[in-house]
Structure formats: structure tokens, C-alpha cells
Image (tube, rainbow, N blue to C red):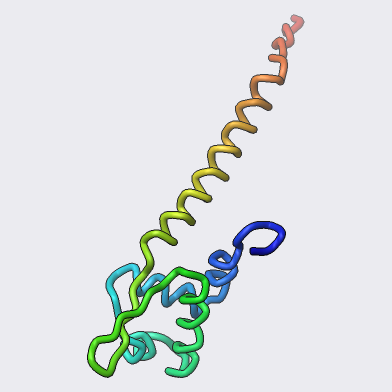
Length: 112
């Protein structure tokens, strides 16, 4: 764990290829060959991206004969969602604090 907590999953999602893989796996589990057929990168590049996603805990793999089937790790995705919810709730609270601390302005009376 680094000084700021485990940012590894967020960093893993920062790469366009890895993000595309996560998006595809959100639809359904897939093998490397399926993913490579859908992406504009080579099969070795997909394998490397999957390794990073697996190391970050975002995907899991399961052997199916000679193939490996990859799927999203729901626990890791839920943890990311919880972090986003925390950030959103903090932002809303801070906004409400600012609004509440701002004194209302009195409208100017127009002179005729």
C-alpha cells in the first residue's frame, strides 16, 4: 500500500485499453482471444493489460480447458463505487456548507 492508500485500481483504469477491457467484461466474461478480437491492440497487449487489471484486483480468471476466462471482480468494483460515493457525498456536504455560510444578499431597491 502506498502513502495515499491503494490507488492501484484507479491507476489501472487510466489506460484506454484497460478501460475498454473493463467495459467489455462488464457486459460478460470473456477469453483473451475474444477481447483481442474486439480491440485495436494485439493479443499479447491484451494479456499484459489483463495482468495489470488482475494485479489491481479488478478482474479474476478461471481456467476453462485450455482457455482462461476473465470476469470483473464485483468486490473490487463495489469498492471503487464506494470511494466515488464518498467523494460525491463530501463534495455535496462541502457545497452545502458554503451555501449555508454565505449570507443572503438583500436586493437593491430601484430608485425612480
